[in-house]
Image (cartoon, rainbow, N blue to C red; front, top):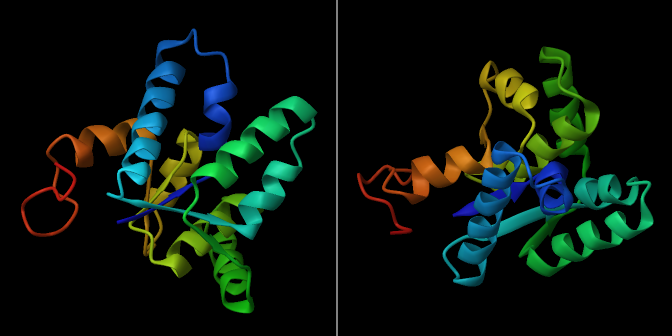
Length: 160
């Protein structure tokens, strides 16, 4: 299964983990990364994600996030006209921001099953669209799909 993590997922481990929700998302992201290293999922990234990480103003944080991104991604999606057009369509149909639209379009292009984000507003807006990828919080993904949920359409979870 292919999973796309957006920029906020890569940033989450470097946030203030004293809040229960932030900590739960952090633990879930670590579980997703662990599954990548077990060979159970592939983590997809993109040139758009790499560019967004490059815009982080705190140099130390930018380096940490970039290292996490490059150290855990299996595949990088290059931007092309098809992705740019799809991102534009997503923006036109919603209030989704440009980078988020690019992330969704890249995840769709790569054939990702899910795009993970900690942005609840994005999740809500994406739920109103007809997308080829699910947009979910990492905690919900782990709870729903990795703890016995069915994502494969076969009635069982391949990751159990």
